[in-house]
Amino acid sequence: MVESAESVVRDFFEKEGGILVYISDDYGFTRALRNVVSRVIGLRGEVLQSFSSVNAAMDKCAELRDQDIPFVVFIERMLDNRPSTDSIIRIKREFPDARMIVLTWEATQETVAYFFELGVSRVLVKPASANKVVEELAGTISPPMELKQQIERCRELLAARDYEAALESSDRIIIARPDSARALAMRGDALMGLGRVDQAVQAYMASHEANPIFMAPLLKLAEAFRDMEDERALAYLKELDAISPLNPERKIDIAEQHLRQGEHEQAEQYLDQSMRAAERETRSMVGDLTERIVDAVSPVAPDLAVKYLSRVIDTKRVLGRDDLVHFNRLGIILRGEGRWAEAVDVYAKAVTLAPEDPVIHYNMGLAHWEGHERMKALDCFEKGLRIDPNFYAGSVGAALNIGSLYLDLHYADEARPFFEHVLSLDPENELARAKLDKAENLARTDPRPKRGHEPEPSGNTVFNLEELAAPSKKKKKKKKKRKPFTNLEI
Image (cartoon, rainbow, N blue to C red):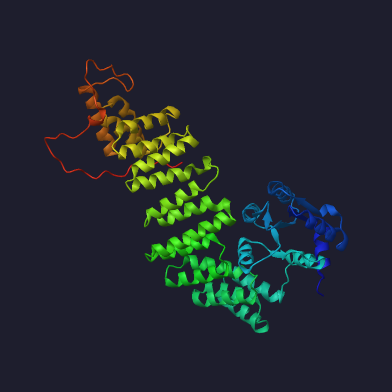
């Protein structure tokens, strides 16, 4: 006998002790939902916990999870006149098994598809009758399972990786129920397991067409397409993007495919769309998306990396320490492009956010050094060392850089500890050994006061330290290309 929706919901509350967590600033619907719970289902109002604050609701969800109490989350599409996508992502990240219903005054196919991709169970359009609320809640608690025994058997075969038997099982279900979205999706899983990718994609597509709100096949398609590296991947991803165009992550997948094919202009169009979607829907993801974009484009299109890192910095109303990673990476990329002066400006802005971060001062010093401003570079290094005398510890490259600059400027005593540190990390480092020998020889043949203790020059003599290590003009040697400096990540 098929249970009624009311009995499914009542069992959830009475037998399982379930709770509704409702996140909303729509007080009218809050009263209506409370009325559904208390009058239609006949339960006490305590089973409905309403919150206007997402943080307070998440604290409640954590409490329920820790007490092993089942719960369903109702959340408004708009909170405080902003899309609640950020909050949905946070909830699913913290509570991956949470069942969630989104409430909205209007729903397009695009928004519904994206919500299901995020893991939402149902989308309920307001105003909604009491019966409709109960039906959707019942469907979320206990989704209908057509041909339950056959489907469960097919799942077991897939879990056991018996893909041939699973394919036969799914085909038997489809013969009885050709429109079964679940059976079609499992058929896709079986075909994918057998390596028959094209047929699996067709099965997933058929599953989605049979039930557009069933997102399992879309998620499988996204996973399959991401792993492909041939021309079909781009076509599949674009087809999926047409179904659910609000997913910024997939637009980066599409851009990466265009980059693989050398189509930078098309890639940039999708990256722009990804950033716009994130800025509109999921502001908490903007930083992570930017990092992923930069990872994708830096090797082939560093100008695009500069564009998107600059964008995430420039469009933020309030910058904080969490943004230092963007400043640091932007500076590194600018330096790699030979744009050291721009890199210095970027690091200068970062210093205003975190003046006591030694890594920023160190990387700014590298930028000055690449611009042949060695004294400014040394000043930056020493600022970092004053903040944390050991910030370079454990980094062969950073210690070599600092020691080499001291040595270039004839500060042999200051240079030696850095080369000794490198040799303590890597006793076979020939470069550090050679530089240490050079520093010790220089200290014997041309002893100088320690940095900061130089005597005042007498008369009108002016020493230009920028020229101390310049090569002799007598022998014109071919200038060697300098190896990239070792950056430090924040």
